[in-house]
Length: 436
Ligand code: SF4
Ligand code: SF4
Image (tube, rainbow, N blue to C red; front, side, top):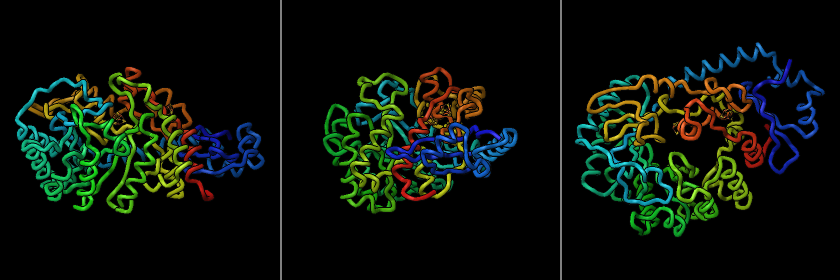
């Protein structure tokens, strides 16, 4: 018997207790400091109890369980719903201070009707038999122009005719005027971004050339919720605006949004993906954002009514009373995510849609697919990245993001590490109010 390769032992933040997690065994336990120290030294008083839970294993037997879990994950991935992003244009009326599309070259354009018809026909042929939905993305897809309205109408018609949901990612500026049209569709959700309270949001997400946007976005969110649409409110955070996140939470609570079952939230970390931002000292690392968020929540726990961070698998563990299934792959590109744009190009995911030399095929005017690149993306998982295959955090992390790996390390098949132990330590302190 020896310690499992998948044990993750971490100290609970601000506590003497330790959390021991093993995703392959599906086990999690809180240990006192003495037991944790003994476990680390291999001097357990009751090794049989730890063996029964899969923390101590026969390596060959664990290898068999690992292979079986990997096969189950791969089978499940084949049945997962596919998210198909469609970008009708990269034009936008906002000049956000951190926009990563601001360096994209103007595109070659085609007749929008022909491109949308070709998109749906490609979806019909290529993703037949798969569960799927379409997400409208930009640029800003809800610009208040007849041309944009026509595109949204066509996407609503096309998705409805196929029984597919349509999700919309918008800056929210013209959302209110679009609500009646969206009500005619199968709209899964409308994702809108608010980066903080009014002054902070307006400073980061102004109109191109200047001008506030906060009030219009709030009106749009209210109109969408009143119209029965689901709103997913996103905040993009860095060191400049994290301090306003609590105020944003209280604003949302006061608006009554958090009591609406059609309201949800998410956070995006402002990060450097494709090019240097003008002010990159404001960027958080994967760890420092969640450390500062942890402090913020400690000081103002009401924030949890607005947003409950995952802290790796800890929120799931304490909400569900069990661990999630092992995560062999956290990058959905070309597996459960594809992106298409108005130039007729196909990309692996939203992180690279529209970026020069990142396309992996075309759907208009002709159909092509770079099979080698698709297989490079689709084969990416923790078993195909050498540093991941020996990492004890692998089944909580999943190997991170392929686009970030390529951007920073020149290859998709490189690690993009999550600070799993530190996140679990903070998440256990936040959510672990009860025994496991
Ligand atoms: S490359 Fe990154 S952004 Fe794109 S799907 Fe994978 S994890 Fe997501
Ligand atoms: S990306 Fe890093 S933390 Fe994640 S599994 Fe790979 S080596 Fe481990």
